[in-house]
Amino acid sequence: MTTGYKPVQRLTRTYVIALSSLFILTIIGQILIGKLLNIQSRDTTIINIAGRQRMLSQNIVKNALLLSDHTDHIQFRGQQDKLAELVQLWQTSHHSLLHGNPTVNIPSDYNSHKVGALFAKLAPHYERIAQSCLFLQEMTWERKDQVQELIGIILAHEPNFLSLMNQITFQYETESQARIRQIQLIEIIIEVIIFLVILSQVIFIFRPMHSKVKEHIGIIKRQRHELSEHVQELRAAEEELHQQAEEMLAQHEQIVAKNQNLNLVLRRMKSNEEVTKKVLQKLKSTTEKYNEKNFQMTQSIRQALIMQQAMLPTPERIQSIFPEFFIIYRPKAIVSGDFYWVHRNRKQVYCAVVDCTGHGVPGGFMSMLGNAYLSDIVMGRGLESPAIILEAISVKIRHTLKQDTSQSISGMDIGIFRYDKAESLLTFAGSKLSIYIIQDQEFMILKGDRKLVGGKTPKHNRLFQNQEVELTPDARAFMTSDGLIDQNNEDRRSFGKRAFMRLLKQHGNQSMLEIKAIFENALDTHQGNADQRDDITVMGMVFE
Image 1 (tube, rainbow, N blue to C red):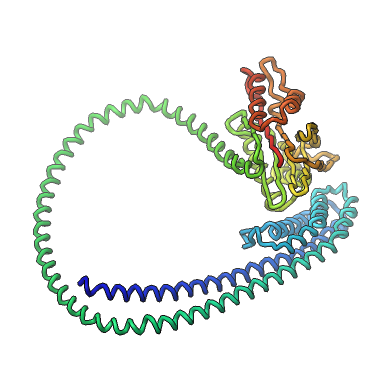
Image 2 (cartoon, rainbow, N blue to C red):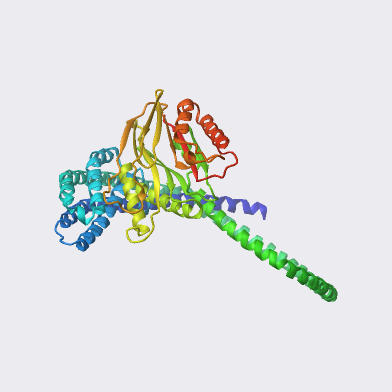
């Protein structure tokens, strides 16, 4: 049987190779067809979104103009809500085209150099329109006289926006047609290869195989006779095994009977043990219930800590953005009202330190809200100006907590900057938090606005302001919440902003690890045995 099997094995292997080659080529062709359909679908989606931007911008202008026609504050507020919905869809679509969006099958690296250049020209018009629309959404009825000024800004930038969006849409269509033609050419080449492979299989495989099959038919007949003899031997062996199995079954029944008797004795012995255990359990029940409740409460808070730590950027994530940095992060309770946040897109880096109202569980809830809003506004809506980002977060908090009608005054102190490495330009905006910069042996402070993010809307609602500074290589920046500065010692004296700045001026040019050790030692020495007063967050980084 072994001698006759080898030729059949060779024929089978040859046939499998032939079919596999055809299968692989067919799969490649199907993959290319699928890729063509996917490219067509993706390109159609992107072209539709790009074309829709023109319609949305026109609708935004129309709804902005309607704001000046309403005669009472209810209609005015309703028109503001309609404008907000259009602007959010417009901004989301713009961000998807610019940075990609996997939910609508747009990869982040989709745009070509030409499209990217057109979007760069479009950026100033887009930002001016977006900023004006945001101001229109937040505008109160008493400030209605400023509507015309903002509408004028929108009308001034809309023609350039429409013209550039037309150019972007045309460029998308041109690039899509080029990709489709390239894949169609590859598909024709594969079809020619498949035809040649089939022809070669007919000549070199199937004709020799036909003669081999005839030769092996005789071998198979002889092997079948041998197999019939083996079957008879197996049947005899099967009868013998069946007899042995019956003997083993009888022995098993005897063992089961003995086990039942043993189990009866064991149950009687265990009954006495169970009585004793019940008495002990009653004595321990009160202590166990108390310990369980205390454990559950602690575990719930620790689960909240795990969720909060998961939302913070990992050291590896921060190091990929700032190769040299340090973070001091000390919650007052288990969970913290402070958090830090970083984000990088293809052109810019964002970094923020946030101090939410309260600490412990209430502060933890506010920090989760703040982190979600910050990520949605920057990564989802694509807002780039730090001042506009703060305004947008403030609107979100007031709306979510219904602060215009409720007693809630919770909010956040935030320091956030955007760094453009290509231009070496840092843009900062702050809500009660400042940024401290050291470069070329000089120390400077960019102070945040004395305005809370969230909370009750003041009568004179001054907008947040951007501050810009050009950085040199090896420049350092530091941000802190007020927890370190307000921490008191055993004599109830606070650490103080002067001591914080003095340490920066003396040691700011050392390595980040050395600066962290200096601050931690100074804080521990000052605090002594005094209780921690608030959540503490200090962050420093070096710019390349």
